[in-house]
Length: 239
Length: 239
DNA sequence: GAAATTAATTGATCTGGATCAAGGAAACGC
DNA sequence: GCGTTTCCTTGATCCAGATCAATTAATTTC
Image (cartoon, rainbow over all chains, first blue to last red; front, side):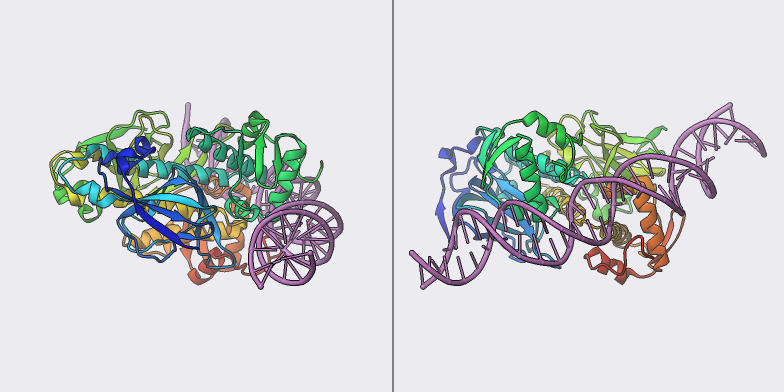
């Protein structure tokens, strides 16, 4: 459960096209940080530095230390997502971020690059864009949660994960779920039992193949249809 | 259903302490816009100008034109909230914003003030802060929706409305709900019937007085307790 | 101000998912 | 390797909230 830090040369970084750090054109804009599975990038209550984090590889869960009972997962972050955008004006983080697998992030001093120097319009535009996009992403997540049927939520999550892989240039229909069933349940606002049964049901309907955490989507159209709330067929119990 | 526009002098504006427009110190940074009840500030699909909107009086509902069925409400906005923060990097709005009562907003050209001139650190800091805060607000809304029990969600909404009034310097326990039961239902992700029954139940438990849309919170502690998921007593049916 | 809409309430029934309760299967520790 | 822990699955029951159906109360409209 340790982290290691090293210098990073943004101008040679493979992500420079989509990274604010690189947009600043600054060679030492960022540090690369390695985080082991189950380790935290930061905890709720930790002091906020002027840094945001860009995921280079791996995945994370973002969670709120629950007032009651178990942790509540408020999101999953995959490369090339950003973390820490919700705390730019805060002294302490409100959420905890845990690596779901061995991961790497770039740490970017946004404050320095946004304000220092007289003109960095690209950089600033990127930061505004990032923040605005993050707002839309959260809105979308909330929309998903207003679906009363767990089926719709699950379909939405799977498609979202698939889409994000596609955006990153990976094959969208086959991947490994980095999170546990329990994490999925918490994110969707349902119980773990419900997740288990839903996955079984979806498998029976041949929407995907699933073995442990390896999934291969077979019928994306049906998933899309389902995510929009058109109940496909009977329910959980019936089949 | 019309809107009227007039010039606004930020330096004399009563909201200048909490407004980015005023932080820019620019006299003609903003326009004041009056919007009648039921009129739209903007519709999904409308072109995005370089403006964000600061609510000076009144209230709005933010909704996504639903793919299926009726509209889905993704949020309520009250003075002194901002609108349009989710579209800074977009050409078209994704959401529609409708006034719940006759309202006034200031329209602020953020792009101009963020980039033009060589130094407006306060202004930029404000915009970043606004965006970051909006992300946290959305995260909080999503957290509310992960509560499986409608009771918790309702309690959370009422407290949120109350809190926002308190933040704005108004009396927190007595106010008028600007939105319909139907809007509340959509926002909470439950049916209108459920909202109606919940309000009745809460009233029976003496958590508040309610006549039409005028509410007076009596037991804020109980509401807080409930919002955290500690079921107060029996359920909807029993009492 | 009466008719026509629309919003809100109330009741009865049904069901999806929670909850309670065991088992089984990987991963982890030594 | 074996035991331990954690994760996941499966079954049975129950209940909160959806759905269907009607009635009542507010707004609009003319």
